[in-house]
Amino acid sequence: MKVVVAGSSGLIGTALVAALRRDGHEVARLVRRQPAAPDEFAWDPARAELDQRALRGADAAVNLCGRNTHAQRWTGRFKQELRDSRITPTDVLAGAVAAAGVPVLVNAGGVHVYGGATGDRVIDETARPGSGFLATLCRDWEAATAPAADAGVRTVLLRGGLVLARTGGLLGVLRPLFGLGIGGRFGDGRQYTPWISLADEVGAIRHVLADSRVAGPVNAVGPAPVTNAEFTRALGRALRRPTPLVVPSFVLRAAVGEFADEAVLRGPRAIPTVLEESDYVFRHPTLGTALTDLFDPAGDGA
Image 1 (cartoon, rainbow, N blue to C red):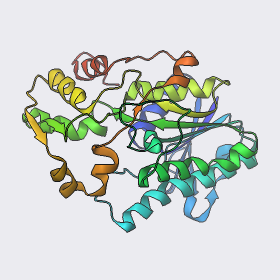
Image 2: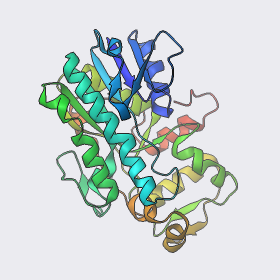
Image 3: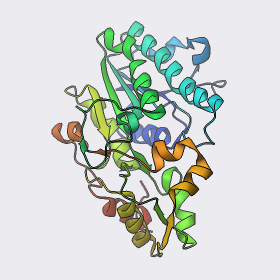
């Protein structure tokens, strides 16, 4: 296939491009700077500009655009940046895909579309969107794919969890703290931490690109949900470090503000029903297997 990728320079995008090329696919990368390689094509979502040569003969497009929600403390201005970095590029790419007749669009969104007030209830793709800033952001992000879906493009709405990789991502933040012996659970630790390994995040994207049965919402999360307390203990075991601390809720709220209640002290108990029913086989079916692989010196760190 020829696959167009927006957001190819991030953690997931870098791994995805490498995997697609190993599979023998052609990759066209959309970049917001001057193209510096034959596989790069310029686009400027803010101006609704996209080099149409990128989409010529394309079989699919993957959209991974979006600023990190934890990049800084949430202010009104930053929250607008989070929206603009997701919704505008998605709308532009979806419209371009529809106009060019590209048959598949995979849009990477977030599992927090379900909101945080889900408790112990198991959440699959049939659950309704929740409330709160993140849930609304994810819902509007998905809605921006409408130009493609309305044109008959097979549109996959990935609802991703926290991606675990050897470097970067969630573990890039937590590993140094745990290494110093100051790792601990957040609040009461009963909230769920929806996780997925980088290998399975990339594997899920490759799977939905190839499987014509898959369309609509797809939870890109590991099949064995864990609470924050369970995640903390598992990470401590993998790093052979104690996890004696508890970070009180009020400390988290003081440190990171609204983000604490939206994404740290709450999380859905999401399961990947669509992936499993479409026969995707997880490389890391449990958190333990993912962490063991990531921290094994002989492993590939994927």
